[in-house]
Image (tube, rainbow, N blue to C red; front, side):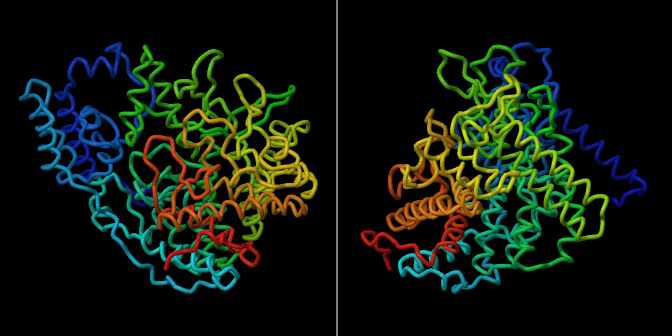
Length: 597
């Protein structure tokens, strides 16, 4: 319906009738007493926040609970990725009647039968070979080492295995799917991740551009723009159960990467209002006051205040929350878990505040109280781009407005997060009013975004000193690991040591390189060489690329977290192409690991 158009009374009546049927069915559908006791200790308790999404199959309700605790699935994501064979209200009505006829409890066999009759595997993403795929992208010509050139050629072929288009039925019958429709080619990350993910897409786009797949890269960006137009922000991923949750905001840098290469000014200006909409989501929903040394700053944090467990990790969240006694505590934990997922770092000791004497646990997540270095640096960069583009468009008022935001964020990053004594930036604990001085790879993000006022070479010198002080490189600038550690502590979560993640490698490596300080650039090269080598050796051994790697063992995949290691893998491929495009003229592959034919 266009803005200002009169509402359709017929449509309103249909929606009202459908809602009434669904609510009536839900009123009859009751969980077993034990399950209800788990949901609410106090029967009068009501979660004060909005639901994750409107669906009573995918996001909330007893049917979701029953299937996630049925024991039918090893991974909670499996159920919520299924498609419906009948309208949701009909499925809920049938389930209500069946459960009532069985005295309120269904056997495993009955749940299996009902599942087979009413749900099917998603299969909404159809394999597709992008028309602009080329087996000889120009980046290959820059790679001097023969083995690495063959490795890059094989990586290039992986794009075809990750490319999909969304089935039209998702567009025509959106309530029958958790998957959200997007109009262009999708490059999935891989493994269990069979949808668009927000910050993964940045490194996928960079890889596509380096492989001369310009139309595909543009279409991938346009998919995110499509979702921003629909929702007012980019979701964590393209599933309805990711509503009201985002991820690190990198749409604007994606657009910048494409624009800098193709100079498509008409496309940029056409989409500028959408980029502004995405940026304003963060300004309007994720900014809080931060006080330090008598001054108040507006800075960004992650925050997802919705009811209930994450649908894709429902059982895991619910089981963890069962350690808490009050409904308020459980509700708060669910919020913290979803907020930690929004950071992209799910999960990490970076977000916990474990009391002295207690064992490190996600029960102590305090993500909302932490002001992250990387998020504020990303937004500062976004404001900088928006300012430049509005000036280019001739909108001086908006250009100055976003320039002011960029300057205010830059001041906050400098005055709240920078520690001159430690030569680095650090997350800020807004509850305790102090820096969190542990090493996190994200501490280097302002180098990548250029969010500093000192001379770049001076910042490069400081960065090298910081990495030496943390034992990540030697005094001579030699890496002690196979890349940049996520953290230096390991409490069993996947965004911790010993794992290394592609986006953190590229942010650190490119950030160091961008300072133009010779020693920092030398360290960047060495880190890039080490990280590429471990990807390569892993590929030689397995024929696969993985989402994360071990910082100590050459060619070994990373572990930990809520799911088994995933192959594919979109952002790992993109990171390797970025390293090869920068250093391919001098990188040398390990001769003891020849690539099989």
